[in-house]
Image 1 (cartoon, one colour):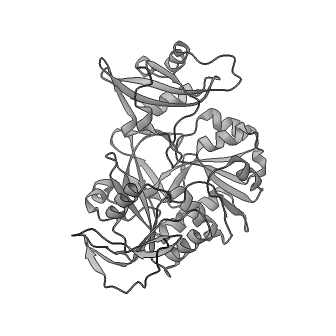
Image 2 (image 1 turned 90 degrees about the vertical axis):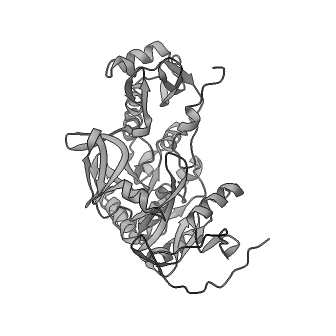
Length: 416
């Protein structure tokens, strides 16, 4: 049944955690396309409410949970706009006037939280990307990543800042992406999507820039893509930084990075978020003055930032700490490894055992074996970092964002 369009009355602002909150918020449950672009444009230029894009097709309970935590005034779907009926004892709460876009993300507990971004922060990030990749006037962007994530939103914002019409695909499809390629068309994707393009024999010289984000890209993947003519820009960032803010280890104009205690990466600059929706406690916890304290560990090499892995991806095995990301990079050098994720799985003796989940390379002389992978890791890392378990799979399970589903990968392999 169609959802009727309702008149949205004006309202008075409120003060929350010391901030004046006086702008309406819409939860936007729309597929990628022109209508989503219109509501995003209105959110950025101030002619419409702030928006929080949510993925269409969510199961009812999942959508209900997100809406309850978000507390929007209205929900916009393909059928229209309807007032959000808050649960008893709760009210829809406006956002700060400068807030334009909210992005849903999850903490370590899986509880939803919403990153608040201003139009200025998003535009600064977009302009920095256009400058870094050397975009020319009239260049376009192809969007094939989820528009409920900062990666997809930022592709659309880059197009708006460039003053061009984006090419919006409903989902990543290799054939559709290839057909949309042109020298003046730039694209953002995750490493798995780039791998699929390479496997399909795509001509990367047909694209403008290829911005990689969402997960660390294996050095072999980058080398192969560049050898085949791709202008590849690996980026590092997250929702709280309006997307990628460090490209090839170098921050975008105006952005800064530093390493804190234990190598924790800290980010500062005009692309930062303003806080977590209705969670000043989490905002205070994440910020140190003007610095956002990330959940990632890094190192500085020749003045460039190298991301070593996430704090929660540290594997504790036999009293030793192993950075899963560094082990994965070492394993990716094996010619028989097409894709790999390293996780810690429960072990009664060691606490966690280092486990390599590997997609074998097609056409390789043989599938990689655990002893040779262990030896490869020990060439550059301590012996305790070598994997104790190898699981061969046809494909790495992914989240909707394109990142590896680590929770699923940490589950014991079938038969164990």
